[in-house]
Image 1 (cartoon, rainbow, N blue to C red):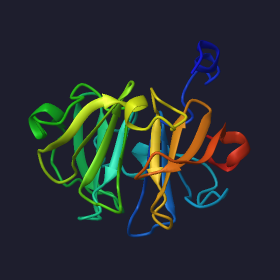
Image 2: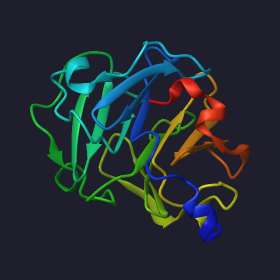
Image 3: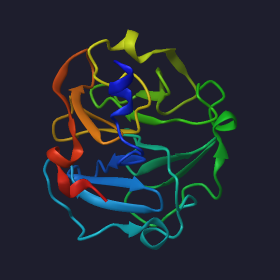
Length: 217
């Protein structure tokens, strides 16, 4: 990727983090700043008319802004993990409930996980539900979604998946649960569709505005 390409991603990410609720697989939640928006994971549709404040949507969630990454453990579908800086918290993916009383340091919760100061984005492979992929800068690692185990890495994204259009600074990502091999990666104002479990590009880089304009805040 050239320097000009890198500069073209825009001044800020379109989204900070996102997740699909396994108990309602068409529901995709997008986070940006202190707001959240519910959209259809498979089309250009908003489920809500406009974004809401995270603090008004789920007042008991400990992080009301600046969520860096998140994932739902498919082996325990109500468990939503939210990451912010070097902290993690466990909440209910479908309601205003904390599963933990307070956030924890990532380093104390999972000492073997890499990227303990910040995780940029993450996703779980729904073909192999224990496989959690973590992204930070230009690196990726695979860990156990339900325990303190490092499966491999960190390694360079470019070495792991040479065909993926984005090889650094992935802002957010999600797997479409109604088409589990479909992994969407977001970087700046762009999105691409890749294979979640292999080095294949299903649809190359395009602007989020041209792909699904209703997703934009």
